[in-house]
Length: 388
Image (cartoon, rainbow, N blue to C red; front, side):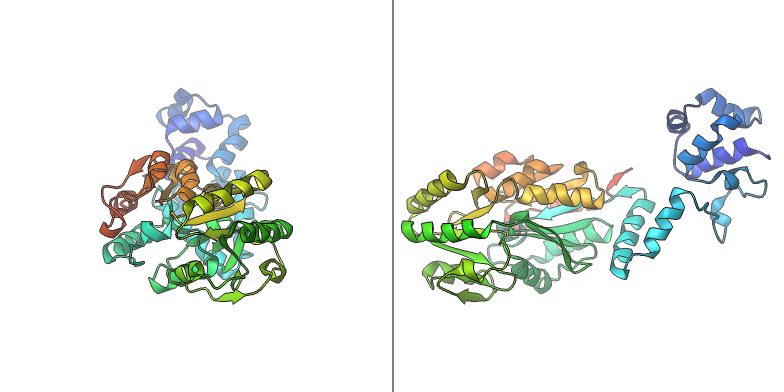
């Protein structure tokens, strides 16, 4: 059979595995493994299959006398049709080009002995300055972070249309990026150009929310895929439109223009917070079993499906990308960011954040959104990622 024990030791080394790890995974004592080199011995036949499974190699390739000890010298690699590797290669060949590109990016990070981090960032007053811009220093730190194989996610209360425009305007179109819009209720894969997750409020509830808002004298609007839908051309929508460029459709019954449950409804009140709180209280009393309410600013009250939010985006994308939750980072400044700061491996509150958001975070930035508060964290986690 040739020097099988020596070939196994070479493969253990090539896999970046210690003899102790190999011993634990195969159940073979470390002293026996050492004897393969020291005493020029081979493993017992009954251990061959589990050794092949742990090393990810076919039994034929391992036992073949012609099999070279250094796989890196091969112009090709033999793969058994019944092996896990064969299934992976087959699945890769069936992927579309965008999915192949994303997978290759992940493999690049792994080949460098790194696991990627996922950075979830709120936009307004977090990644964006109070002037709604991305500073040059923050942009360069983010580019360096993603250049090393890490993943960037815009996680915002804004609609998808608005988030995509911000992404394009400031050059945030890094490879393997995602957008979690509507407070995480819609997740969009930017490489693939498609939505991979979406939840919404049932249409009868949306209609009643508009009726309740009319009764309590507050402004609300919702969203279709293309428009902001509202029944009033008030000061509130003008304020909102000064921050986002999504077109508005004015209609007497916004719910009737929807053909699918919208991800959220927003209540805006610029002057009378107590009136807004009365509206919030009645909505919570009527629909606390199906929706959650939280503020994204002192004037913007978000209404989204129960149990969802930005924290959902953290969990869903970590699962989707097979990244451990410990390798997720989230940054924000307002109440609607709290769930992602709690869920992420590292939750970062801006110095300018609301007090409740600071309490939800693990750390607080030394400077605010106007003075590159996120840069030290991007530089630290982008400097080499965590070793496997």
